[in-house]
Length: 243
Image (tube, rainbow, N blue to C red; front, side, top):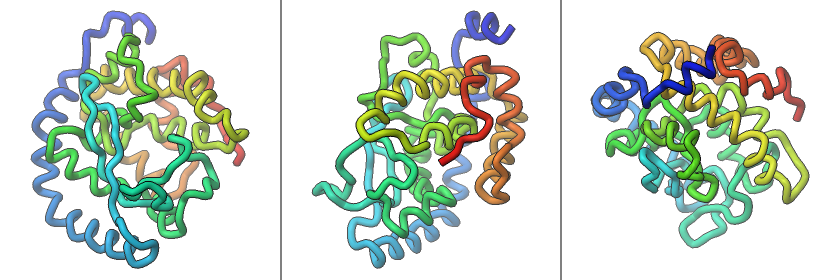
């Protein structure tokens, strides 16, 4: 049933279109006086703990395949002239490039807070598919085109479903291949399901699930159960991932 619905879908749901085009940017304007000072405090802390720069920008693929610069608080060693880390484009568990302060920021997803600027600029939304590195995107793939029809999000259901699986340690040199072949197809299926089926109720479920995972520390969240029921590809994700 899910497969037939997906085959006849024509693009992002009406709710996604309205929310990401209008409501998210209005919400970002209202939240900026609260989030802005917090980002400045965290940036000061990162700079003091790890040295400059406190923030970096990363190339990501956004709506309709356009490349944009995504803001983040720096969580990895500053190895390149622009402050970014070098090496693999993917970050695994226990990656030795992650700094002490960066590990704390990642634990609470606080490194993503500067992306409110991307929301204000219309490049991102609060909830949606997480934007990928351009080298991992195949714009000729119908699955990719369906996902790229919507603005990427600061957070989304895919994070909750595959996060532990995609960041599990793997043998050096095979992480990116495994990500492309095994993990990325599942992420795309979940992202497409979200883009085409999103409603206000689903967004509330995603938001609550983020609280369950990252604040309450629960391994299982309510949106995970729904994704497993409605997205056949999600069955490939192990129920528990050991690190």
